Length: 235
Image (cartoon, rainbow, N blue to C red; front, side):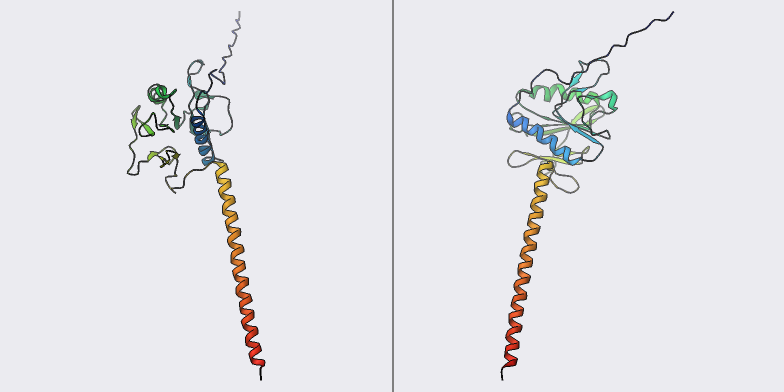
């Protein structure tokens, strides 16, 4: 005698039902950080996203977290509705939270405990207003199952070993992400396209100016040669 057991399909929602509820500044920075990192890893097996539900316990849809931005290396970069750690086989390499009044408590107390327990190697917080963190950027690196604060270098930069980047705040309080190897500051895809157009425009202007200079020199030489010929023809 056989008994059929119904398979219960567990629903993992794509939304927690809560509005983002952030200021324009915090929302803009959240999106900018994601776009900076997306452009850095374009074309690579690296998944970059943010404000996405990350489920970390198979079978329990109540166990999730919503990082502002996170990077997972070595996985398909394609779009997802949610991120299930057990299906992907990897936790994020780095998480970055954009801290605000409404998220400060979670960002500084609850999330570090959770992220360290999940084994996420690096965790950073950025406060674009400078009102809730002093200094406005701080970071932690996992060691022996615990987070240890990343100490800034002599220039006040924090090092991300996972992403091979520096994280620093400029004189305007804006977060910038220079590449550790080249020092080049990360740009969004749009900024890179604008910069490429500007380089091309400047190259065309320089080429046109060089051509005009060369043509002017040729005209001058022709005038001088004409003057010499005229002198030789005189009796």
